[in-house]
Every structure is written in structure tokens, then in C-alpha cells.
Image (spheres, rainbow, N blue to C red):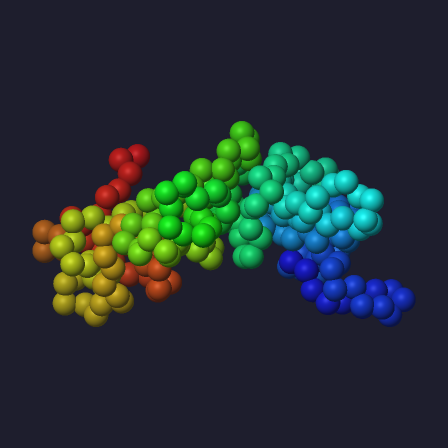
Length: 224
């Protein structure tokens, strides 16, 4: 995260990088790199993104976006760049190895869209950026999903709901609906199931963020 803060001599430092606690990251990156925290992991390390901006006309290095892992010691590791990774909001951490966000890729030769910015999975162990095209399901060709956040954990996918699946406040068909979600929507599992009148209900949190219950009959769940 970066913000406008005064320096010790009273001058503006709009590009100085800070984390969410207000700590300056100058010890990790020079100010011109515009470093930004993407996420933290348990041992104190961080995922970060930064942009190299040439500071003199003779600098042969082009402007370029980077993403990587910074260890608790402050040493950057697993650093990658495909030159077009976007840094609008994400990427977001999925465990210690993966990030999810949006990245620009070259459109197919026969594509009618001027640019392609799909949701992608970034593997910091290998450097591969893999488009998650299944998240485009149900969207018009000119629209693409935008990753606004990530919640690591077990999820269930709505399937065969005909029209949409109601997520209920309580584990009963007469309970108020928190929303009706179509096939393909992922529901975060909260680790609890119950059976009421022969219906197995799964405790879930839908995209709206309010916890509820969904019928297991219309959910694809991992076996383990």
C-alpha cells in the first residue's frame, strides 16, 4: 500500500511505500519501485508487487511490473515478471505458493477484444501464470471476471440447480433466503453439516458475506 505522507524534512513523498500498519518499506525497496503489500503469511514474510520506473533518460531498463515473496529477513525471493501483470488491487495470496489476481495476456489472433485481462493463478514456485478461464462462465465475451479478494479454504461449487440455489439463513427450506446463486458460483464452506427432514445442509458463506446454509444436493464438494 502506498500513500501521501510527509518526509522528515517536510516534503511530500507520494510514492513512498507503506504497509497496512503504517510501516515504511524503504528498507526493502527503493522509493521509486512503488512497492505494495499484496498479503502476509504466517512466519512474517510478505507477498509484494512493485514497479520499476526508469529515473534517467540513459537508463536502459524499461518500466516493468514485478511480483514476488519477501522473507521475514527482508530478502526478496521467488521474484517474477511477465511485464504486464496488473497491480490495480491484487494479487491475493492462496497459501505460501500461489497468488490469484488479474494479468494481461495476448489475445488470440482471431479475438475481437482489444485486450485480454483474465483472472490468473500465479505459481511462485515455477513462475507460471495460468488463466482461470472457467471463471468466465456466463459472462459476455467482452467481459472478464475481476479478482477483488481471496479467502483460502474449502469451497463448494453450485451445480445442477436448474435456475439458482437459495442459501438460507437456517438449515431449513422455510428459512429466509440470503440470495439465490446460479451454477458455478463458489460458496465458502464453514466446516459444518446437518441433516433436517432428510435434507443434508452445508454451512456456507456466499459472495454476499453473510453465513448461511445450502442443500448438499446441489453442491459439488471435494471428497477429502
